[in-house]
Image (cartoon, rainbow, N blue to C red):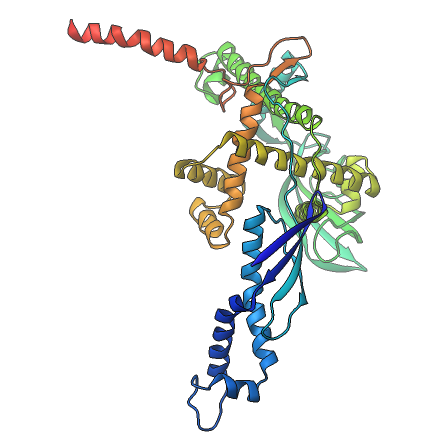
Length: 466
């Protein structure tokens, strides 16, 4: 077999493959055997029909076509391996030359992984915002904790913003109740929003026993976005009573004895969370700086597939939440064109980052072991809210394990460039990333840790000898 490669673009190649007729013979023999099993010819047992008889009964052309269909995919893969091309999609194959007992020639155009000149990634410099943690942030967290331990007390007055009401809702259209558009005995906080447009305004000022009808649009079901009449009846108005912030509250709401200890813990946890947010911003900033140093050709088929996947994912999320696309765009302050432009920009950046990280992982010769794969499977299952074993079974059955392996390798490549980067905050302080733990705390540097262990070892030996 002979093959030649023509580069059509940085992300597309054309293979021209020539296969001598001798190399078609195994596929030709297999085609005769398969056809012999499928036809009935008087005087011959099934499967024992000679090739010459098959040629007369079925036609030599049909046998050759079947042999070609069998051999072309094999020779295409061999040509890919010989040329070291990495395909990204199914090829467009065309048989350009073939006659009986003559060589077969075909071409295959395919989108391929681009070649990237990886820039130096040691010491990449980037900047992120300072960590901001105010007393107000801490107070808001303590207030949220108070609300978790609050009690609801019935009040004999109209509902106001922040009150809770127990209500019944019925949506009708042209006087007829809409199936599935009714609730009974539901507790709702006035002013919370996110349920039905106009509901909070209708509830404000209603007392127990009051009924009111207002117009709104359904956010789910077959009539999503349709105008309907909504009847709301309030059976209870309740006021939230919050516990006092004192030592008794601290003991009730946490493992701490005093408010001071509780508040200090809240501040510490918030600080760790902000540190992790800053680290995520640092990773993005470092990767962005590195991408600015390299030209990454993007295969349009990959970009298109990713765009479609992200659109579909968003549409599913909005449908599940009962939010129309126009409402989502209004909340985001974007037009449809602006949304599409922003989505395409983010997708192109993401695809370019993936190609670059793949090259870095290859250069660093990263590998993974079974424990890393298992841990990644469990984490992905938790993120999607699935049972880890069921998630793992699905990944194996649908051959998604190579994708997970690639995710792990990209994560290692990103960690490599981030740990070697110099990231500072807006105030000029170096951001610690190498020793940052998953819980947001800063671990001991590896070198210092090893030195400490070495210093402790003789002491332990001395104690044992004593």
